[in-house]
Image 1 (spheres, rainbow, N blue to C red):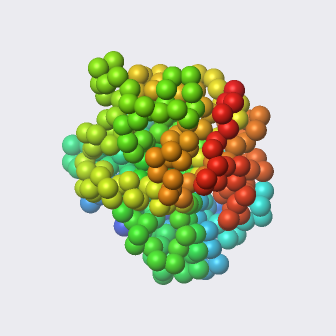
Image 2 (cartoon, helix red, strand yellow):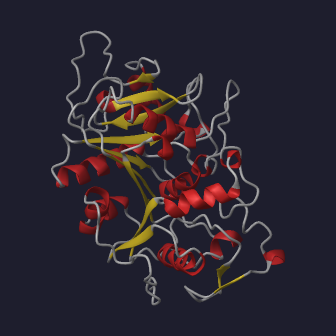
Length: 358
């Protein structure tokens, strides 16, 4: 979303602990409908994620008032283009497809860079930093991008605002999938949500977090060994592996990170035709994970089966779909994964992911 458009939206925002665009209205503007279903000013909001910094987001239901009857939350993280408005529209379309708008709060945070011309109190990161949970670049305060979803989840699970909430989905596509996979490993908010089911849906990311130093032998999906570190010195550093952790992740022991990721409900939502190179990470560390996104997803799952068979993860493949967030989330498989738990997945614990990736 361009900065001029957001400046107009921002005029309608009141920055309290949770400040929702349109929830407190300037002048004669009418209250927005609930659920709010358009990527427009009336559905825009900001939330405080540090002590002074704020994060933009879109929402279908306001976070600063009671929303009785809402049983499900879906937080969707955008890709490299930081187009939270498009992702909000996509998830609204998916929610509408299952007739779930009234019972589902949809939220789409917007992680900014300097190119987005953030205001003085808006958190912003480098183009790679927001994906990896790094600290913001602001001079007045530095916060991890993961604190954004932390703060949204905390608002959602305030019993006075969503008293009927039963489940939370955190999902992202492409760069958003990178964010969600690492966030699933490192966040400390899930364990504070007794009685609320949490699922992480990782869709078509360019790379994954590996819990050990092994990687697939070139040309295979399920044969692993230790690569030549001298040829790729940083292949196991954060955010590809658990070495040289950033501030957010280093707050936990390594074994706790491994345990959290392995025991959480994580679904790898893969496009069966996602084999092109658009926005693909082609660094040495990423190429050790596979030649393209679909192969990388299958390889990661096989790695878990080989070294951590106690994991709680699964794979769901959307056949014939490439690198399209709209096609992924609104597909039959995507809708099942998002809204119908438990879901019959194409690969489950104890089953090797297919070997003949295209």
